[in-house]
Length: 363
Image (cartoon, rainbow, N blue to C red):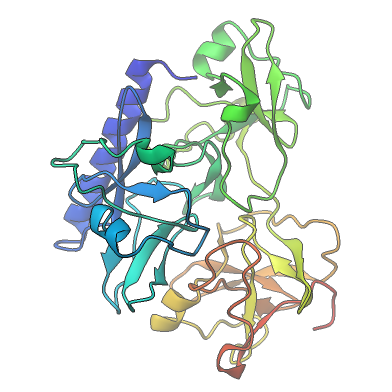
């Protein structure tokens, strides 16, 4: 658990990252940013700093707030041709769904986002707890972040990088005293306080430290921060002493559905697709195509790990922009922008050129 001073520093840095992103993009500002206060912790805001809420009577990918409800709780809407975006460092997935009136509402990790009519200024959170069904939207305790150098790795709710210590053992932390000052453990009050990005591949739990605190673990390994990381995306602790490393979930795993059987999923649990207009080892999806079908990218030279049942040949192909897309039996892999939740396969058969990827070799 972070001290209030540390937490406030993280929020300030996250907001600074949002401002820098806006400056870099001119008039184009990220749709969703992050703010917070001491009472509620960090939570999502719009580009003007107004608090965003979720409605527990919704379902992932489905809004149930219309008529008077939508008057009191206006949805966060974007234009037909707009793509929502997250400010730098905010973990999680952002997308949009179509409402019954044809407008498009922004969703975060599947949950539709709203304003509260009685919030008057940036930072107001008067909608928190209304009717026991409206709440600010806090990023999950664990999610996927990353950077261009290392690819995807685990981050906390503010986008700060998490690490494992190779001198630990599964379920046991061996980092105390000066070690724990340099590498503060990720602590929670109880296991029930942990939230995880939906679909994240890996087992999340806790281990009790010798001082009685509870440290979060991933696949058994205790998780830590590095004191010299200053902002989301920093990973300056990777490789320190050859015993500290960022934490990478399995790159490729197997999902399944009644209609399509088994298919490949990425480290965030989202369905992966192949493009029949590609060639083995060559990606032909760029520009608007790559916005609708984001490639599964890794850092150059990054080791790719696979889960049980993934039997094909895994590699990478360099794209024309210098990035590296993961390939399976030679075919580049992509996500589909309109899949909202893990288990969605709405990209299958789109244009008769996109398909889910069976995990068995010999496609």
